[in-house]
Image (cartoon, rainbow, N blue to C red; front, side):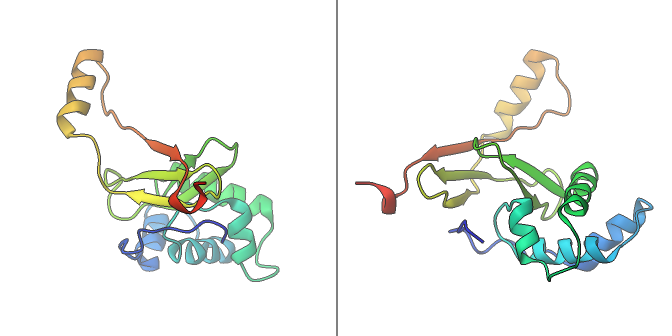
Length: 152
């Protein structure tokens, strides 16, 4: 995979938990879906469909099947989609509950991704929800810069 993550202690995803979630929502565990979940469970950072395709054994599935699987997994909240501003969607398995999230720091030059566990205080999100009248508020936040290796 082209990106590197400097936050490697993320909780491993248990494939049996993911397949049970698919079954619980009346979704089949097809061979391609299982293979995609296996690839994603080994990643500690968001990956593109192209990276997933490259990591799969030859002939397991085509790109359209990957797109469909990612759409299903995102709809079921088993993966999160990220946009790092380059027009390429990246996906990461949800580890734990859907409220457990993190943010990213991305190098504009080499695309290294560093996962940040720090987040805004929950009071800020509650205040924004209260002041706006919105409910079930969530957020995504990515920081962009130039990493130490790419600085002149």
